[in-house]
Image (tube, rainbow, N blue to C red; front, side, top):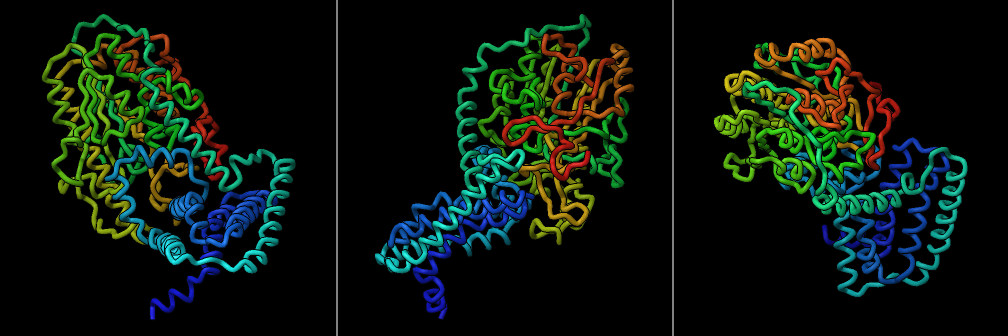
Length: 552
């Protein structure tokens, strides 16, 4: 019976129309989600409809045609999944880069909780490919008269789409075919992704001669330790020390010497952009200069510091790896993983303790955590499971309370890790300091919305809200009273973490370099907030307030 039903639905003509529908479905949806002007929406729907219809009508061998058009089918399936996740926008350059930089564990965690849309995509596209294969094997062909009847409609659709596109180019402000016409915009983003990958592969050559010309800015002989911590997917609105009404920071709440910003925003909602900006002097306005500079670890090395980098994430052949491996000692501890999925950042305390035991007079340690990255339940141990229940079965608004409980538990785990790091360095050196921020925030189906996770092509405010924290020891406070006074003056001012993290770290380390910007350092009397910027998918710096749906 099932076989009979299948054969009736998936005839050659059915295969023909399913190909057209499957390839064009994302364009139809995008025409409504992207708030296009009328003619731009018409162009977006009819150009792809006409072109696919024409291509499908070229040959009687519909099975072969389907497989020749596989790239369009792949993009369509990918696009449908992203529209389910984020509600709008085309496949971004960063999405393609994520395909090659995201480790398989992260991908599996995410996909295993997206089964509803994966089922939809499978039902829509897998039968298309299976039936095409059957048609090829059995040498099935479409009727010539059928194709001839369809071609005029295909040509007409193409003409309507092209005319609407030309009108949009003339009359719609800011309209660009490579950004606003599916799938041209997707293909353009593929090109940009390939171009960036080539530049990344050539990074060691383009940055080989770079130097900070860094040197110590003070002559104090006491041992100095600077710990820079970069968190993951941790938004400030779920931190107790930033005003959250849940006790997610029991460790940090008990610490003296803590300065916390409640007004910090990242300039990117993606890890592979945000972390390199934190680890270098690059920020939104000059993001493309990243290929020609080195990271903050090199600046500290030039100034006489021993350096170490420890990560609780996997290598991904990106700037994070490049900047981390500049250190005298570097380790990605998950390469030696024995704990399975659960990987709390407190595991980083052991290598931190070991490096401090070397008693280097000036020591920089950079710790890159896994923080609150989905799947949240895998980011903390039993000792931090304070909020329950957390037994969500999928990533959906229906399970929001359980998702939030798990997310908040991951914040508690981060708090335990940071409090432990502070205790270690406070007992190891008279002049100790720690700087923490997260790469970006996270959406959690807030206020009845359907937004979840991060890295959406267009950010929400929750995806860029981050904690920004400085801790300094009593000895540091006594030796550098002017910096502590500046911190007190600056603590309530807005902070762009991507801009200020690097320069604040230099100030903590007492390092002088021509690239240092006093106006960007939270420890400087000259600190001056700038208007919040954001790095777009095309690496352009835009005002965050100008992004549709953002209200800082």
